[in-house]
Image (cartoon, rainbow, N blue to C red; front, side, top):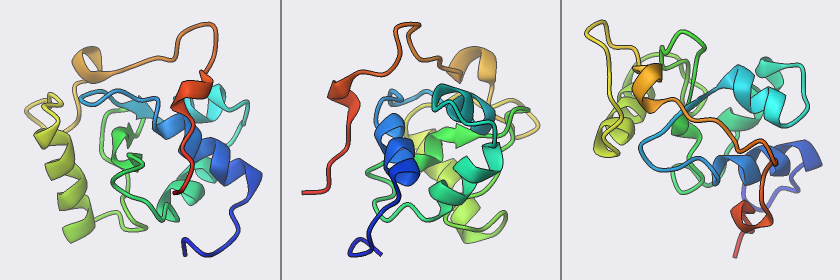
Length: 123
């Protein structure tokens, strides 16, 4: 997939992902809003096609209720276990029911918008 041409939308999603600090998460909805997109599902589709995971950290995007959502196109099994493991390694806090504690781990973009320093360019 890295050889495939990325859409401008997918590239904007990946650029935004690298701005999310280690140990923090955003929701699919927040990421969509940041990009000026009304569809969290469109964001999810781009995330599942992320050819640079976990270096471009799509594991830092969760559902609005703090549940993990999906990872690498799966919503259960080993991929989701890997997403959780990556978040645990980053010291993301979880609630007793397995959801991410968004009060502790939630992150928002600065009001000024995204910075060029966060852009991801494939070497």
